[in-house]
Length: 196
Image (tube, rainbow, N blue to C red; front, side, top):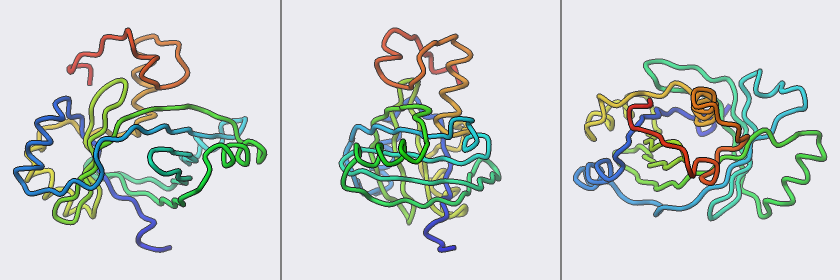
């Protein structure tokens, strides 16, 4: 297994992304990708066996299209490490047809806005989801901890689940009926910063 197919990251609840941006700028971070809208589609088998096994099969579109497979997650001190294989594609709709023809079904659609930086060998993304704002820091575990400290994010809550896990929790706690995690589905939902 190639090292570049191992994803190591921490996800932090950071309601004030402007403060995180200021900390990134003060630390000398480089903006890699300005804010962009993402559409993500998670697929599963009809019996839900991928999700049950902790496997993610995702098709994502922002300024490019990517198919991602993730599995074998482990966690230590809120840092998640897992196998991740990703390939860039030319056509979202055709890949969707292929996946459906292979027997997979759309399990969930989720949306977000993402801004990407790099700092001290780590990739830092600022994510705006329908239910809240988060910062992900990706790199090796030691680098992640240094960047968390450098940005003053040590007191932020480390999220132990994926955005999909967080959405399912939010959905259950609020009694939402929407299947998908879209900005439209959360249009009239009040989410306080203390929710997490």
